[in-house]
Amino acid sequence: MSVDVEPGTVAYTNARVLDPARGLDAYGGVLTRGGTIVDAGANLFAGGVPDDATVVDCGGACIAPGFVDMQALLGEPGHEHKETIHSAGVAAASAGITSIACLPNTDPVIDDEAGLEFVARRARETKLVKVYAHGAVTRGCAGGEMTEIGLLSAAGAVGFTEGVTQVRDAGLLRRALSYATAFGAVICQRPEEPAIASGSMNSGALATRLGLKGRSRHAELMMIERDLRLAEMTGGRLHIGPVTAGESVELIRRAKARRLRVTAATAPPYLVLTEDAVGDYRTFAKVSPPLRTEADRRAVAAGVADGTIDAVASDHNPQDQDSKRLPFEAADEGIAGLETLFALTLGLVHDGTGGLLDVLHRLTAGPADILGLDAGRLTPGAPADLTVFDPDAPWVIDPDSFIGKCKNAPFENHTVRGTVLRTVVDGRPIHTAAARDAA
Image (tube, rainbow, N blue to C red):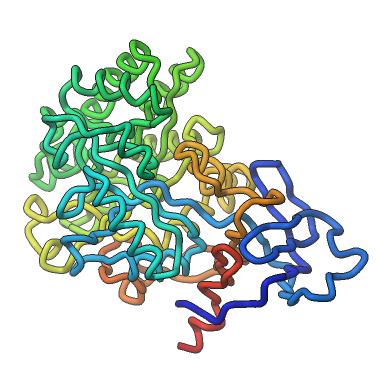
């Protein structure tokens, strides 16, 4: 929810300052002026706050760069009944997200400059989180004619992807990787070979027991292996995600050791849930790629902790009730992920898998660096995009109370720790927990 704009100079005091990009974890504060960070660190206000500053006492809570969600489907234009840029912005702000990169699978597809300008204009009008857009690799995401990557890059596209699908043709992807290199652009690929990825849940004993067609992890491995070879051939920048299988993490780790220009992301469902969440045909647990085994979950979580996986994205793909309340194999894939991105990812800290700065890096500087955004850092001159949070405050996920338009998520009654108290974009507070509680 939007709240009143604060004065131009703000001193955030009595805070645990976390800047993963600098390895900074110290008690101190942050000073912003207008929409820009002036300074951040320990003992910042030892000599007192500036006379013109409004003081925000963080009460010992953490303050960090605003979170960057590099992969979310927002619905607008064309699917406003599922989500809009405004509804997504309100939902994202409540979770500390200050920047979103939306996927191009809208109607019409974001495959030209007009589509990019539409997203930019709507983001300016909503005045909530910053919204960037990926451009489609092919016209209409149809897998045929390649888009004008150079023109779209100049117009503001932060990456190129087919979004919820993938570039199937190896020759076309090779050309796209080569062409994008001239503009420093990244090609983002959803890792599944579609020819063998036609099942509705993870292939295995559970799928057999439920009588559902299985979807093997080998579809993911085959696509990753192919695309890594193409990245090696072209020298292009390849981003893979969401990664769901343990063997995929190892493939990416080896590729990085060979100094290929590859990055990777995953999403919270693959850090928290397994195929068991499908239970008795629970369509809210139907995602793409599908939920895997406990061994896969542990391997992906370890990949996030050690940096093999560079980012955690929401992979937000909201579906309405009519799309989900169907027989399992007929139901649409995807869940609402914005409002749980932070708390579910922070679970890696609470269960001892990763350190706080390392995990926060996957939500801040990691995705910002992949997309070339001026975000994810508490450095002087950077945009004043901030989140203040209590890392230990517990709450129970109730999808029915989500702010976004759709409530489809398989996390009901899941207890998490980590509550966002304030979200700031360009120095403007766009969410406070107090304002939400009072609404």
